[in-house]
Each structure stands twice: as C-alpha cells, then as structure tokens.
Length: 393
Image (cartoon, one colour):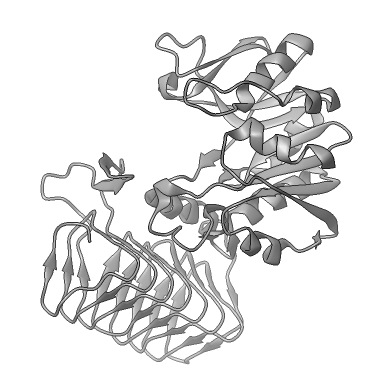
C-alpha cells in the first residue's frame, strides 16, 4: 500500500515550538511525531512512503532519507499550503495504485491502521462525545454514506480521524475547487469516493491530532507510558530509578537523583546531582538538568539547560533554552479552572487543570524568575532576575 504522509504545514498553532521545527518533527518520546505515523504505516504493510513536505522540508528529508525501515521513501513538495487535497495532489506523480493518506501530525494506534489498510477503501473514525467540531460520518452499518463538516445536528458520533485508503482512480479526482475558507479540501475527494465506492468506516482504538502545545505534552504522555525499562547510560550507584525509565547510551545520571517513570533520558543528557524527575517526562539529547531541580510531566527539547534549584511542571521547553537558577513554574490556577494558553493570538482553554508554560527556542530566564501558569516565552525571549511573569513575551 503506497502511503502519503502529510508533513508540509507550518504548525502555527504550535508556535513558538515550530519557529524553526516543522510540527511533524517535534519530539514524541524517542522519535519525531511523524515517525510514529510512518511506523504505523510500515507495520500495516506500506510498500512506499511518500512525504509531502514544505515548511523546513530538509528536516523531514534528513531524518527519513531514501529508505525508512527497509521501505522506499519519496518526497513531494507543496510550495504553498493550500489545503489537504492540494497536498495529496502534490504527491500524485508518485501514486500508481490504491493509496493511503495519513497526517504526519497525528498519532494512530498501529493495530487500527492495519485494519484500515485491510478494509480498503476506508475512512478512519473515532467516536467522540461532542462531534459538532469535527467532520462527522453518516453510516449504514460499517458502510460510510456521507460526511459533513462541523454539523449543528450530527448524524452520528463518529468523527473523521483524517486517515484514508483511496482507490487508485481517486488520484484523478484531486483537482477540487477551493472551499469557502480558500483551501482545496480532501473531504471533497472523500465525498466522491463515497459516491463511487463502498467505503468502510474503521473505528480507531486510539487517535490524537497533535496541534497545540498541550497536545504535544499529551502525546508524550501516551508514548512514554508505553516504555519498557532500559538502562544503558552511566547511572550513579545511589541514584534511584523507579519503574519504566529509559536512560540512553551516553546519558549520565548523577548521585542522589530520583526518577519515577515513565521517563526517557536521551543520549548525552546529564541529570543531577539530587534532581527529582517524575511524571511522563522527556529529557532530550544534550540537555542538562542540574542540582536539586524538580521536573514533573515535562518535555525538555535538545540542548536546553535547567541548571539548579528550579521547578518545572507540566511544561514544554524548546531547544537551547536556559532557565536561570531558582526559576519556578506555576502550573495550577487558584480557581481550579483549566489553564488557558495563547494560540494564534487568542487565549484558549487547554482543558487541563494542570499546565505550566511553553518556552521557545533560545529563551532565557534570569535567576529566581517566576513564570505563571499559561505563560508563553517566545523564541529568544528573556526575563530579568527576580521577575514574576504573568503575561506572554
């Protein structure tokens, strides 16, 4: 099964984490987000992977190369982001048979992707409590009879999960007109396939659209929870590693460190002494976590330093950031309402009672900085010593 993986978008809702990284290449456990998609496709029987790239395309190309896990890889460029049908159309020259389309910024449970491939032509779906904000499927048994976007009166609770297997002829149906929002929508192609073929709805056991920073945190919670204990790095005799903890080759765990899994310490990272790591925490490559630092349920991207005497909870830290000594992150509102975060200029609910901060690449805090829950520091932002930050900067 040829598989097209959409990985061209800028990921504007994920900023500042995507200022220099395409969203599909953000880290989820031990690999980029798109690699989880590719792995699910390969495990399901993909014969070729075709990545549609655009923003920061070279990062995708350099990671996946020309062969990934023994499967040939091709690339198509979407020079302007003009919708999902336009993205698949960019890959049309590579398509010569039935083909699947997966989103490079979604997580799918691999077993369900295998079922999707076997059921071709097929659409992935997941039952949701409130389908009014999704594309919703109408069905007759397992057969899909229609799809409607964000209906006020949904025909079912089955949300379109954005994964498809199309018949080969659908490659000729990708030239669809612009929608009302000015994009060429793949759902228009889906509608025609439904008219022309018997399309099966395949319910996913688990699916996640990773579009905003707290969803990246949730994606890591999912995948870190699948870890098996594996200690390969240099661990001090009196360090206390509990549960599913992975310490990669080249990582160092100093004396007095306590790590409660699930946690992944990547190569060349250095933790401690006397640090406390808990919750679903990813410590990226070449990260330094210093003396008496506490990290809880946090993603720390490559090259970042949290040197000593700091607390960071339920947060996402970008690459090459530096938190000054004594930096404290708040992750809970006094009124117990969900923490709100700025997404594309608008304050929106994360839906999480506990969420800390988002720190962009290269940001720096002065010593004894306090960061309020829901604050975003832009790439390269700085704070002054002793400052309390309650608004984005």
